Length: 109
Image 1: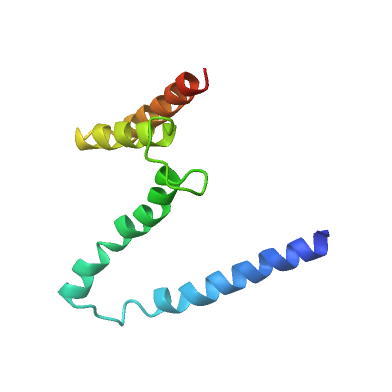
Image 2 (image 1 turned 120 degrees about the horizontal axis):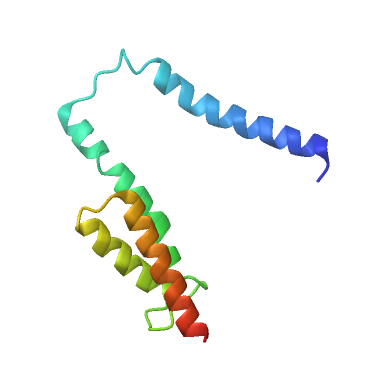
């Protein structure tokens, strides 16, 4: 890919992203959302994160892997358990990463 094509791609992605988001942000002060809509919008981030994370954890190689050889499962369990203890985000991330690399080391050894 040439530099011109790359710059065109980046500018195009910027234009699409900006064009979709700016009008909503520009007119958001005039728009009044009901309490029900605001409560429903609170579920969007967990739903999006779940849609991203679950396939990575349960299907790391494209097929369902619910077995002891999947280090992503160990990492997810440790991260969820750490988060359930109301630990800081850094502790959740470090716990999950440590569990992942430990499981991967043990599985590959």
